[in-house]
Image (cartoon, rainbow, N blue to C red):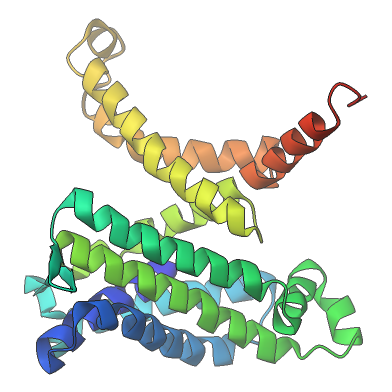
Length: 278
């Protein structure tokens, strides 16, 4: 249900700028903090859940927040959505794709360094222990409820930052954008990149951004062509993107469950010892 927390960040950044006239560059981290608080609220009741029940709890957060977005017109603008402003810093307005790239890149680097350093701290090691084997972690004295709640807050913070950046890239946010399909795309990024890997999150995101572009190019090439006419694909071509996402998730779960990050580590280890790899 991370699309919902993504949406919280998007709407909160737009709301803070419009209502309180806070500079957009400050609204983005504030939106991340606000999203973290919302994640904390949902994380508290879910902290003692495990496995399938925990997954259902995150889905519940998705549907609750979707309903909130639709009803809270003062916050989201309702069905009309909410307009956003471009990022401006030192008199420079980042209102074009080429210039906004550097804003996103700067935030990506900062967030990547923060995540990488978190894994080296006491809390980071505790989170890894809870992820890998929660029973052993509990025996070691690690508070499972605390760290599960903390993980909700941290992941929601990152989602909120991403949502705010997304909002100020499009200059408009709508309620319909942050649906369950969007959450499935986030899930696909994690599965494809590799669970529990900071580098894997970047790899998974890159894969999920580039793959639809390739699928769309293929769909455009097939549309109206002899393959389309022979197989009578028709309207099915327009759903190739969703089909490709589903197929990618299944293939990675079956053939590469540890994701691209694990494969990348294997490749690095092989070439590090080359030509004595065997």
